[in-house]
Amino acid sequence: MSGEYVGAVNLEAMAEAHRYNAFLVELVEQALGAPTRCLDFGAGDGLMTRLVAARGLRPACVEPDARLAARLTASGFTVWADIAECPVATFDGIYTLNVLEHIEDDVAALRGLRNCLIPGGRLFIYVPAFPVLYSRMDRLVGHFRRYRRHELASKLEAAGFVVERVAYADSLGFFAALAYRLLSTGTGELTPSSVALYDRWVFPLSRMLDGVVDRWFGKNLLAVARVRP
Image (cartoon, rainbow, N blue to C red; front, side, top):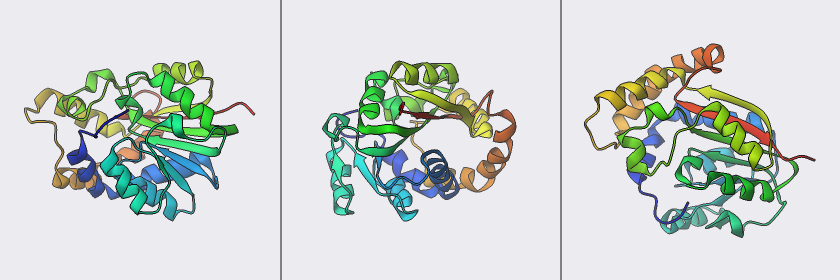
């Protein structure tokens, strides 16, 4: 994960996904508990960092894009450009939201995250799911892959984590993403209006279904893992 982020337009559009973003914050809180010190790996423009901080957590950030990092610093957050710069065995919890898929050597990145956690510290990951859904949008924003449950669990174990949970999320989004892959002829950019429409009408229904089908499919994949005490 290095250089300027090429998916800035989509990142800005996702600010309209108020229900989706609140859902991600809930997942982070549930996974990490109430750590006094956590790390946002791949913080982007700081939207999720600010939402997490508003819940009482104290996030620091890793963000390699200099422009985005400057915005985070201006908001009062500690920012490092690379995980290798972070202090070892410091954080109670780490969360990374739609970031790991941007990193070619994701297992090395996971090892770096493990090194930054205290013994017993937890990691929460949220990534795109299913290679069959890989589309123009994935190419536009620089995704190397989309994940399956077994693949993500195996990589976490290879990096030295104990895996506590792996599940799919946004079940209806799977079908929306598949339709987009098969039918879209656009550039892969999201529009704020389309994001807001999905967030208002489809995503709440998707959440209701997730508890039934999260073992089998979803647009995204989440994982909770910990460092051995």
